[in-house]
Length: 364
Image (cartoon, rainbow, N blue to C red; front, side):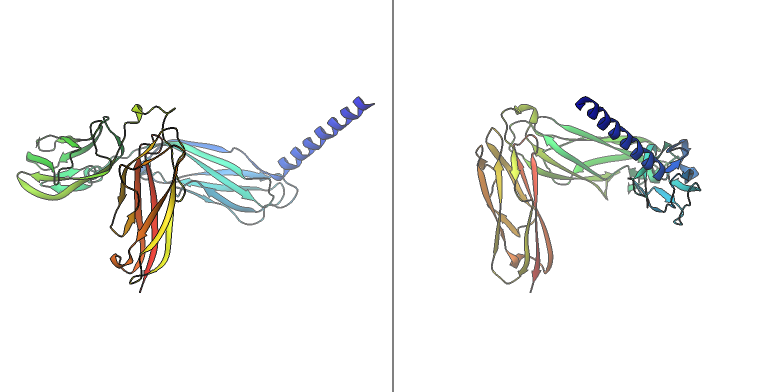
């Protein structure tokens, strides 16, 4: 008897689930297909479109409430009027390939008044890059027909003993060969350069820029550099801006015996501060949740408006919580909003850098 009751209960559950699935299916818009591939399209040919056709399989009118896409390159058009049962409709989706060479895969989310979750559509394809003009490929003018592919590079983390290199292309668009000299306007001690000292008429070349410091160096934190140009012995106003953050060689740190930094507050808000008032003090807590001492490699503040009670060379023991005071001197700040950045570099191999933002509004 008990066994029979169990069988009946299970059968009732199965029937209920099947009914719910049937109702759910009836409520959803039924699309002829949910995916469309445009195949290969030419970037210069412009926007392409596809119509996703559907039928209202529900027993009640349905209204499409929204059709959202994953980026501004994809736009959807649809009718907001009620769709009667068994009636058909269209969602037209267009894609703009301009400045988007390569493969693309875009998702479209459809939400209707009948509920039942969001329905997904998808378009994909491959954009064949259009021919680029020299000005587009090399947008930065140096002088005497010489142009650069880029004038900025961020090296992100640069680990001691592991130099990292980037290349920037350069071209001579003139009908004469040029002599080229590239140099640091202020020696940083971390930059090495390789570049063609002569570029033939119409010739292209590469500037190889390496950021690196040896293991055991005392250099940590942000290192900025500026590369200046001379063309045929004449100075150019063009330059290349470089930045990188020097950290420990993380391959040399055993992850089983390593510090782990935890900053309890990443924004310090002083609120409204009188410019001729007293110095303001706030604090945050840094904890070492790792299994080795946490070493502070550098503490950087962009301006002298904020003083931090933490310095390079400080150590935080395993399990220790350290209160760090931040002092704001309003006399050194112009009226209006303040947004300061405090960058803390440590020997934590997982997160070598932590950034704390300091905000205030300086009033009379």
